[in-house]
Length: 165
Image (cartoon, rainbow, N blue to C red; front, top):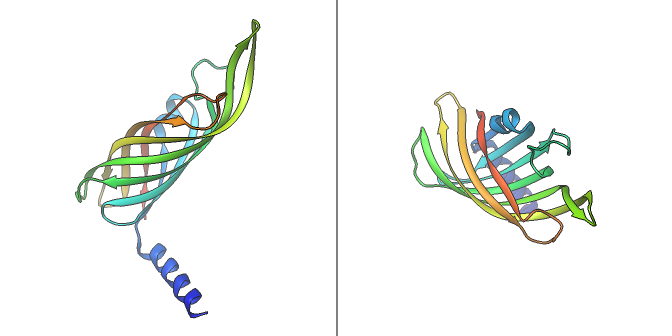
């Protein structure tokens, strides 16, 4: 019982004293009309863990859109400096994605539904103001691992705007 109380106290206190961020990928919203929201938790000055959720708002028939209809992306970031305003980072992510892939078979076009997981990397930079405003820009790519019907590559990138609390 003492171990459970101790572990619960450590977990609650770690969330209480850590820096947390909530961000919206503004470039995805404006350019490719998708909703991409991220939550990030600082583990230390150099490391953070986060999760992003992307929801594609564009119809399947459009020419310019992500293949993924939904993508949930847990990620780990390592920051290369302890600078307060600008900081550069490398990221490793796993993108669990679901969507439709257009295929041609016997002169007929049809969409195959898929759900796959991609392993990938990204790099970027983050600006943090004294008031808590966050801007980060990043780009990366992942590769789907399990299905032959899913797209081979999964993009990850954008310009986030958010708030640190």
